[in-house]
Amino acid sequence: MLTSNKNVLNWVEEMTALTKPDKVVWIDGSKEQLDALRDEAVATGEMIRLNEELLPGCLYHRTQPNDVARVEDRTFICTSKKEDAGPTNNWCAPEEMYAKLTPMYDGVMKGRTMYVIPYSMGPIGSPLAKVGVELTDSIYVVLNMEIMTRMGKAAFENLGETSNDFVRGLHSKADVDPEKRYIVHFPEDNTIWSINSAYGGNVLLGKKCFALRIASFQGKNEGWMAEHMLILGIEKPNGEVKYVTAAFPSACGKTNLAMLIPPEGYRNKGYKVWTVGDDIAWLKQGEDGKLYAINPENGFFGVAPGTNAKSNYNALASTKQGTIFTNVAINNDDMTVWWEGLDKNPPENATEWKGAKVNGKTFGEKLAHPNSRFTAPAKNCPCISPEFDNPQGVPISAMIFGGRRAKTAPLVYQAFDWNHGVFVGSIMASETTAAAAGAVGVVRRDPMAMLPFCGYNMGDYWQHWVDMGVKLGENAPKIFNVNWFRTDDEGHFIWPGFGDNMRVLDWIIERCEGNADAVETAIGYEPKAEDINIEGLSDVTVDTVKDLLNVDKDLWKEDVEGIKAFYARFGDRLPEEMAKQLKALEARLDA
Ligand code: GTP
Ligand code: SPV
Ligand code: MN
Image (cartoon, rainbow, N blue to C red; front, side, top):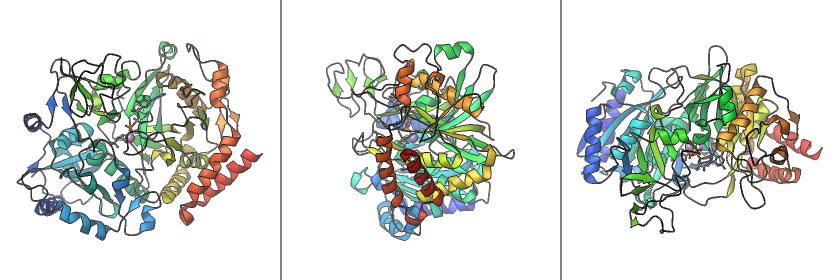
């Protein structure tokens, strides 16, 4: 036992009595303990050790083919009142859900070990950090939590002897039965119960379950924000660093933008990008009135396919040691890893993600699952921000929303003001990706990229954003919307994206500083096409940029109908301000 905090001890005892493990192991975070767990996982075949020279300390894990992504239809927000979960969450009354799940947990860890994982979301000692304890029967979870959080004894020191302010996470992989899979949140009890999965977002309970679903609920009550946002710093030639956050839905480019390498012309001038976070931001007003952000995580749980030395050098470099790979392919000749988009040379002697030995060159199917992932320590990242561990966080100048839209959304536009920005976030839509189970490529509303992650009524969440704007006043960050995914008539992406997204960040930063012009359109302020720097781009002309910035009013009018239908679902929980903003957009489109 690593703590004498009675609230922790009593709860662990209660959950032990319920799940009946053979053994309870408290995770102190020491190297000896973790090494022993790695050895054990390798011995049982749960994990595979990779090439110690090329990928030192790296491990491989494969999940069941039915367990490779988040399961939104089996994810629940259990508030006392249904209206408090809102129309976009699955809901069940807490008593009913506890009654349903308790028998499933009863004795589920018989013959297994329960690991007690103390962890901090956020730098230890940060006023924005919070403590969680996860109970799990999976070594894979322990080893991932070690990378993704500040895990071990120190987290309990942060909690203290008497506090009850910790999130209680109970996970059992059970039989990994998809029919009995539940990812359940009890925001009013600071509790998460997850059963019958072993996939990242469903089982690393500090991540989406705590740092977004529970934390968003806490943030509303405590006056701060938990967002599905990357955080990056842009260093300008004069050495000044400006920080921005960006919310894109799952597998829509957060990790890539967070680690971008500016195009040569920018690098030569002295621009540099620093990564603070790639997935989640906790934001709170500082004493000076500005909005500060921390990354509650300590590592990256990134999408592997598409990651290569050109698209995301820094992410790839982050995976070269101490990394866990899940559901990618193995190159059996040298025990390294491979995925689609790493290079054009799939291994001949491969094991594909489901575990079959195949000739990768002739296989004809994907060797890696589209949602295969790497879990890499943040400290590996060549461009990790010097402010990464700053307990106060970094001051935010701009907040960016974006999604995958083939046609409607332009490359970039700026909201007229904070409330209009909240509206812009609330009407986000994006094509679905492999990060969640279900159809891929279907456009759906995904407000602030939080549709699967908001732990309470989304209408109240928008109101919370409006309220934050009032508190922040003139210190409120400027709000923007971007779309890297516009396609031409053949379905090809028009904008080169990746490092070249720096060209758009440049305009955004200069707007924040009052140095760049804009054109007023029906949907917001847009750059003049000539103000997007295209120097060094071979396939993009000013006319291409004009195309990318074009606002097709007919498409937008169609979109307004979709927004109306979406908003209608919120009834009287729709903030008046959002209804007003929608009317104003309609009027501008008709003008
Ligand atoms: P989660 O970890 O699921 O939250 O995803 P994420 O938002 O961090 O997405 P990530 O950066 O991993 O990108 C997912 C996929 O989007 C990658 O495989 C890329 O192929 C693609 N992508 C990212 N940035 C760009 C871009 O600028 N342009 C284009 N065309 N594709 C991009
Ligand atoms: C996402 O799906 O947005 C992720 C991966 O970041 S997961 O942790 O599985 O949620
Ligand atoms: Mn994510």
